[in-house]
Image (cartoon, rainbow, N blue to C red; front, side, top):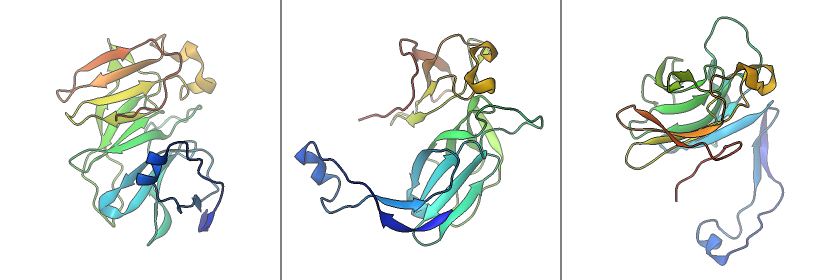
Length: 204
């Protein structure tokens, strides 16, 4: 799956202010390929590496310029013993201020984090701590993407893409696709249910 980085495509610049963020001579490069469905990348600054999910493989991969490509964590999104269909792996990833990897787990239908902080140059154990798995007593559909606010609050989206049977809504406990907030105290509140299929999140 590893490849020698090579240029591909182009960057369309619609605002000159973009040049202050991305070098005008920068090129898009393919770093690795051969994945079934890669998602949810996060840059791990302390390790100078990129972490990302391959959802059908239930794995998180790591790429760095120094070490190339390697499998980093498996399982990543479904930890059950009974085989299940649907999109079972992790999706969106982020790293909290304590250097713990936080992830949306399609298969386990929750937001979780690794038990221990990441350590540069080492692979973590697949030991997870539940962050949020329910709202109003009902299991989430399949948390998809997440972002940490500077005050410690975590926002995440909950579409139905990762449910079994191709996202069959009959397997859902919540009959809408919402955006949620998990506060620093662990309390989960509904931010909005006005979106049809919420996906990616970002703060300015």
